[in-house]
Image 1 (cartoon, helix red, strand yellow):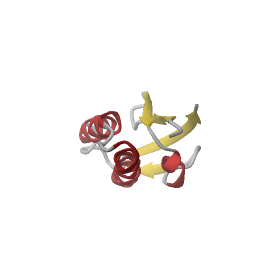
Image 2 (tube, helix red, strand yellow):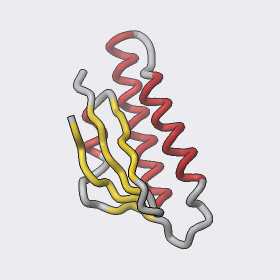
Image 3 (cartoon, rainbow, N blue to C red):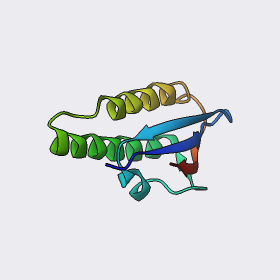
Length: 95
């Protein structure tokens, strides 16, 4: 199963390198595109859940790393919830 990493920039300018065990994340995030905070979290949740489910179908167990990445994204996003129109930019995919 091809893994991929994706770099995002948070509303404060900080960047994180995130992990997905599947290329499905490319169907939900586009490099250079900015998403509202809620939209980014929703897209990430969908993509990483699908990725984890694909691991489960292939290996018989969900991908704890993908689910952990999702928890990290959700936790970090909470810190920006009080901002006026926070946005997250999808910077790039890396192999």
